[in-house]
Image 1: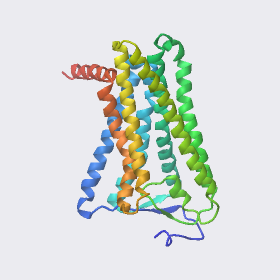
Image 2 (image 1 turned 135 degrees about the horizontal axis):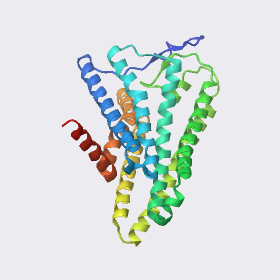
Image 3 (image 1 turned 90 degrees about the horizontal axis):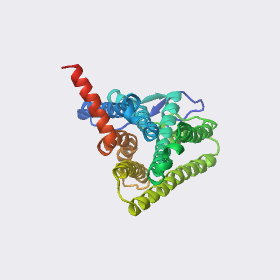
Image 4 (image 1 turned 30 degrees about the vertical axis):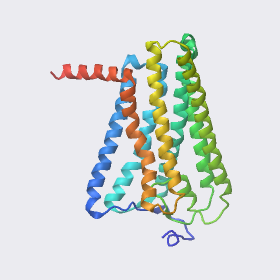
Length: 316
């Protein structure tokens, strides 16, 4: 099909690969996907609202954490609504600028999670290992700088990545994945050397992993050492619970990303299964992350109960 959709003149109207769904289950799949999307947006939206409105959450840790549910909403919104519409309408058409925007947001989301988790691990390292200096170190300027560095580095890397693919001449009009990503856009080119694109993609993947894993290993190793050598106060127990939530989220994200990458390395895996692995990468974390934080972070549970009681009193 890709060969059939090659032309000397590039069209901004692109065909995108279908996610094969049996006609009898199209609407159940659409309804399930819509409920998953609404659940994710609702849960992440609640966390964002609590951080903004509740004074008990106006702390450096939660200011940094604010970026994670925000990124989750961006990631799942960039993917799921358009995919569900394609499943129902079977149109499977996407405009080139929209495709580039979707790919940019998805890549930005993927790398931002790693940087945000590294920033959160750094905050927990200061809180647990240097508690007496926490307020003096994690000032509003420092917190703002950490957040700006995480997002700024993320955007700079992804903008350059998409700048490299934008320079390539395009003549194909078929996106080989069910969503737009950098490599799908690169494959639209019929001429031009993509060696630089491949090398840069591998370099930034390794760089992002090295930064995120390095900062987290350093932070959690020192946290573990501190907890083993000092008495377990209530504050430290609470901090360790927060750390466990962050570690679970990081491991979960690594697993879904690894499964997606490995799905393309084994020829006996069906194309639909490969597409599903890619979809899960951008849907599972945004759905599970707020649940994990809701269960593992006592501050969120307390803040939610306060708001719930106020709402209950208002309507009774």
